[in-house]
Image (cartoon, rainbow, N blue to C red; front, side):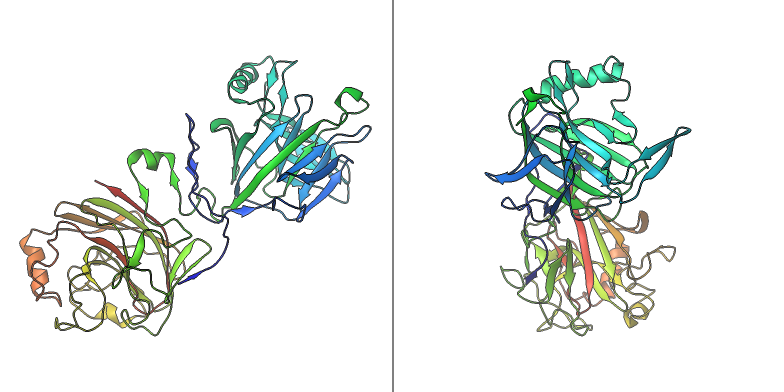
Length: 476
């Protein structure tokens, strides 16, 4: 088994009263700060002081300088960002997202007016650190448009309904002179924030779609009373979201409430093992960039790493699996798998090697793989109950090389196969039609085939490269 990619992995679990809509689970986090140095960061704007101390980045005010920003050296588009901060009560600060700093003057048009931005001026969205107790304004995790339009949320001022309500919320959730946790989701045109687990800002805005992340130390002008005030940041991490609106290998809050569980965490082999032994295969499978891949080994059935199955057994459930086929690929998603049974050949005879026994949602390139033309009535094509019942010919798979979503529902004897939101097969395991199909299949010599009360979930190694992700189950 080969593990590739980022090793900074956590399972995120909020212990607060409110949860974000997206709960990230062990997938592709990257640390923007290594805890020791300012590698990967560059200062722009003013001359405030930045250094590393006790695993945190420290920003400190100086007199007579403009707003200062410690900026990442690369830009980000759609992402989830998390960080912790602790701030001196005298100081205003913030974290820029999707921000820019241009060598030449620029301008933007907004609501019929032109906003001019000087050369060298950091501008863009800022997630505010704004604990202004003397003014009664607690707008931390609000969104300010630095050097352009000003406050985007709250947008009606300190005396407005939104502004007052946001300050009242801030008084309850902000922790003065302690570490606070902020989460930001900037996905598509939507930007949302949470402070210590409580939802705060939620806006739609399209003025900037990409840019750097930056840590601000606000200008204090000539105010000697604020000289030396500090703000600290730590545990700064970011997950890029390549498909807007989706964080791979994660559950939404709605899914959690509905009882969904992740069957694969996106980074490890936890919860899975070989169908032939207690451990995970040492070859034939890799994990890379949040994708579980079975490798190309010539098309043989379970001759390399072999099938993998869940450690747990399941009876009644709804299963979701994203899969992507490569040209000519053959694989399968099996359910109610019985690894103690011997595999069989194409004629139904006992085999020395082969795939574990279970009911199979067929994964196949119907255009290039010869298996599509074997069996009966197309019962070996994509989405079919392999070698038993064919999927609907009206199915609409995505092209080879793109992600598809398989959905399998097992509720007692009733079973459904879905593809990309369309039901393509439905059958009853206790029906005469099912028994007849078994009698005509390669599984006819297996007593009670397909009538088991529970079993494992399986991803098949058929010697072709196939990709899997977003593997979720909901017990019924």
